[in-house]
Image (tube, rainbow, N blue to C red; front, side, top):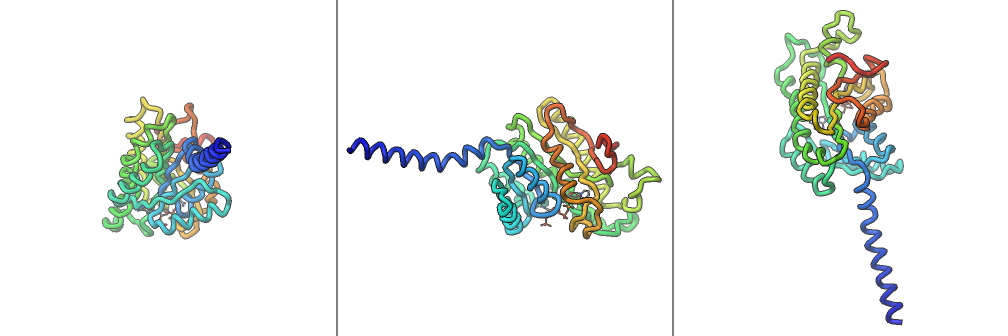
Length: 274
Ligand SMILES: NC(=O)c1ccc[n+]([C@@H]2O[C@H](COP(=O)([O-])OP(=O)(O)OC[C@H]3O[C@@H](n4cnc5c(N)ncnc54)[C@H](OP(=O)(O)O)[C@@H]3O)[C@@H](O)[C@H]2O)c1
């Protein structure tokens, strides 16, 4: 009788232990991705698609409340393996705090998607563009991406197949923008394009530094997409934009590194000139 009771007790506590640890065990086996600016638009849609692919998503959001709302929305669709992480990429302190927060949850990060970005508004004539706005935009699109990459590189290098996607823009291609027949030439300005061109150069340098490691990093243009970013004037959908990013977040060992990809500008191979 005592023995039977002891066995039952052991079985019950064993089940409790299992119940407690199985979800953690499951999460540990999942690939993990951190996406900045994922509370809405392209970042959010990319999170949704990666969740559908079975990734665990740390959803970066400048406002924790907006991030939590986004996570709840995903959960209502049955996409439960996501959690919000507060990050303002213009603040070193906020980036380090996000790194500490994620570091408490995992020892390995498989994918970093540097998606958070801003345009700086219009017009952006090179002769009159505000230097303050130029600094503000560089602080997000370039320095913010550098801050985040540097903070998370240690977790990434622990993954067997680490991937970084720097969300860029076709408007950053020196080759396309200097072509007089370029269809978007009237949108080439003195703020946004220079900031993403600088981000592209950082992507090249990063890929070169890490060329003898398994890490792959590419600059990916999601295409002209209808979001708050352009007051929904974009012609593409967030679904297509998300797919373009996801493809390079998930590339295999034979995939490229140090490339500039724009399926909008080159539907055939996606590779475009810097
Ligand atoms: N839409 C397009 O046509 C297009 C084309 C080419 C490239 N892109 C690039 O795609 C990326 C996403 O664009 P989108 O269209 O989704 O833009 P969006 O609708 O304006 O969303 C931008 C996201 O970035 C976040 N963000 C901005 N500044 C931040 C900061 N300092 N720290 C952390 N997060 C910050 C925003 O957070 P809040 O919600 O708090 O503002 C938001 O979540 C950007 O890098 C953009 O340059 C967009």
